[in-house]
Image (spheres, rainbow, N blue to C red):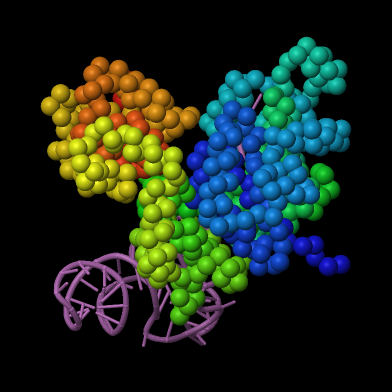
Length: 494
RNA sequence: GGCGCCAUCGUCUAUCGGUUAGGACAUCGCCCUUUCAAGGCGGAAAGACGGGUUCGAUUCCCGUUGGCGCUACCA
């Protein structure tokens, strides 16, 4: 029998800004599928009702499109295996949960989160792997019916063997062994009736006929649960390849706290999608000796080799990305195309241009004032000096505290709008017991490069979360990043 | 703490038992040049540690160390 056509997928969770790691995983899945003449699917994993947003989903789709990746099936383009948004597939998961329940492969669990927490603390203290202790496994049918009828909330958990080992075959890493007794009896269906990732990804990968799954390394330890589900259902699992996690220069997992991780950040800074994809492609399959390193997407596909996908976590080396981007800028564009691109980047949309103009108009006397006034909107890192950030009305520790609090609170802001930003800054002034005007001054400097500029909150919204985070971090580093102790004190005080 | 993954220049990597351990970014020097870039040429720079296996280990095995991930009714 001939092998079925290759089908891969990327399944981002719409819970934040589009991440370069998502683009990396998407690129690898895309390259592998296209290399083998197969299809690439985009699926939205929005089973976390509390954190998923439509805005984030839209931003992720836009960002991946901007990168030049196109999917054969997905929530925006449809396809024969839809819907491609997990929140719209609840009935499907429900059916499979019932099947597992009926076959005795899963069970209803009424344990409270408090009991589970105590159980885990005790297990950890005893040096045991954290794992559901099976209390609800012993409930009689009558008791389950009674408690359910009484309206007690419950979850459905996966039944996991107590003995033996599970062998996960990873196409790149070979067999990985796990003892079943170290595998937790994962929740499959939450008390809100929605599935967890574990159930949804298995059901969907099967129904969508996914043949190969390239996913982040953080999923290795849950692979046994997924394999167990496939065997309970009697399905053929897809081939697995775990991709290394992109790293900060200090080798920790790439995080926005230490580095820009947003695709949009790179877009705003004027990186070309071709350069970003080329760069990520090089991290997935290094160039061969003697080959040039400049490769477009079709070239990346052509020379993609599973055997050359790395297993160690590569550092996201911005310097190399800069070099690549520079080459695209100077080698791939004639002056006319370059000028067009620069104009497009600077103005982005007519709405944005109008908005910026309206903010600048009341503050200038000559059109020639525009360049210096607005330069910060078209720049990356600003050349700041520590003394520029210090003010007479506010001590340096307060400035550092204000910047640190802003960094934390702005990250948690649900919607990146003037109103939200304003509320955040005002709250920080409150916490510090200072006037907003005095607290705002160092922010003006950090964000716009000058204590006098166009309005701060608008500037921040216009720059976007990623760039604002970068500038605030830069300013804070200039004055001295908070120590561990300061971090704890400041967090407690806010 | 438990389980798992990983380990070659500062960074990304090549090497699939025998090489002066190769390339790219970054860095340094020289050349070109009205400046600065770009470009050209050249330099410095690596097998974490300890045991095995082998005539011979960067390469295979074990251990140590280190880094990382997971350890949720988040993905």
